[in-house]
Image (cartoon, rainbow, N blue to C red; front, side, top):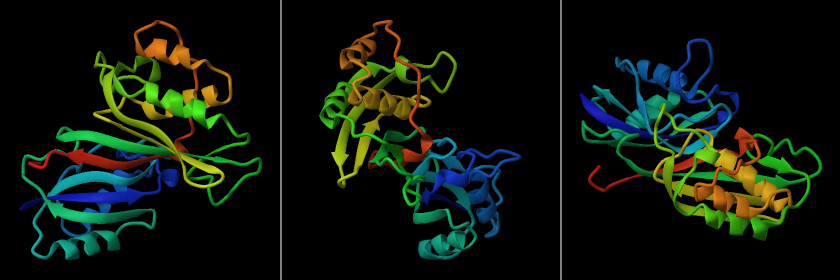
Length: 249
């Protein structure tokens, strides 16, 4: 019996999030079904995080124990053959028995994509937030830099556990133009609050549209009780891209 790690990618559009649910299609449910087809007898897989409905991943990490007599390449092919088209195994590795993809993670990285268009774009709508008018990208980049560092993000999300800490350390927060109409936001942190990335993106877009002063964001991060306008960016633009671990793990 070996402990295996899969890095998986999925399009979240047709899933009710990652976590298994009795009456809904989920990434975990589909993956566990595929594993059972190759002899897995465990109760549940472990994952680096639980993405929401409509959120995508290119670097989700899952682990499980399996009695497998063949190569890692054969394992990848076997699992892939039983997965639906919107989930794919990117790589397979053996890991230590005590490795946990969530608790051993050093940091996680997400991207959020925005496209500018006045008309619907069927080839992009599932993967980007479409905004009709060009915002002030420099103002959004300046605002993105405010999130870097150790801050209380209670105005931008809620803890996963009741009375849990809302302090997070953000290592990267930046926008990048990838085409004439498309921009991608990258954020990397030690951990994230529920809806944290989508709240941050929504707030930055409001700044870029001239509907919010970035000074209010700075004050909120410094503990000011100033309320941030309610709202959240659509799930379709968000992708979990990387989960990092110490070399020893």
